[in-house]
Length: 216
Image: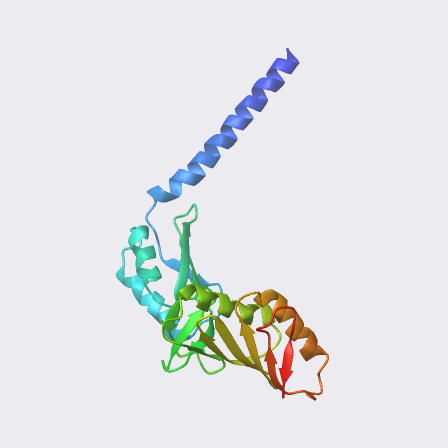
């Protein structure tokens, strides 16, 4: 008898938990949304925060789809997540695009790691990329990966032609050739690490299979 009572208690306990969970998921959407709390994945300027704030003021906070769509329409915004807590408080998290290079000849044109081009004032400290006309977008994306793979080493300038990438890095002009950038990055890192006194300079040519040529 005691075991049956204990079993029934467990069943009731589980049902109560399921009911609480169900109410937690459903109840917030039946409450009016109060003021919104906005956070950002990384630090951005006050002007950009004000831009988001103006949209939140204009769009009805109970129309979350429209609000999300309006924020994501801003060119420097990569993604937006929204959720309401059990009291109906709306929390908005904005993930800004991170520019990695500035595009030569465009003034304030920049590109993020996904190859998305947009315009921003945050261009002063970014390396410059010159993209020749007719280069496919896939090749540009592959070349941009060099910046990510080189991480702690500074690339000052990049030129992307069809089937060829050139960069200015330390005392070297690097001709990367076509593809296999990961292996080439590792070789360049070792060269730079072993030349901390900047004794070597010239042109490093990676266009040949299993060979690196230094032209002075």
